[in-house]
Image 1 (cartoon, rainbow, N blue to C red):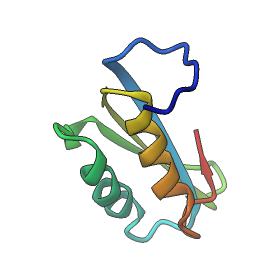
Image 2: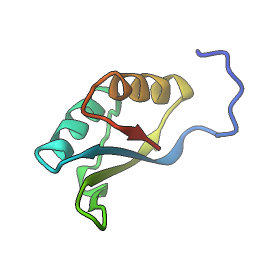
Image 3: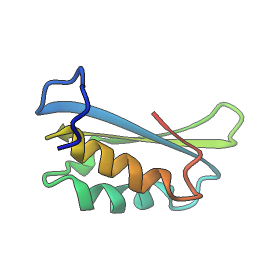
Image 4: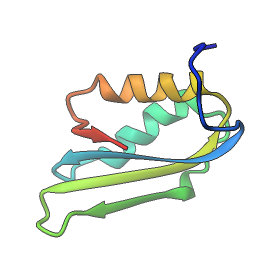
Length: 88
């Protein structure tokens, strides 16, 4: 356990948004990492949106988060990659 206080009550449906520049295979990249942390990832609950100017791609995965530790691990792995500009 992380030992941190959290406002979330688990399990909880949780949307995670990852943003990067360019549009290449970023959606598959995010899903590959999410699969390592989310047991029952529903890949149909994934959306992608290109910014108005076409510079940024946002990929949102919505899943059932089981714990704060799970979220911390997923955010940690994604944030370590240079392909990820921002996580929300």
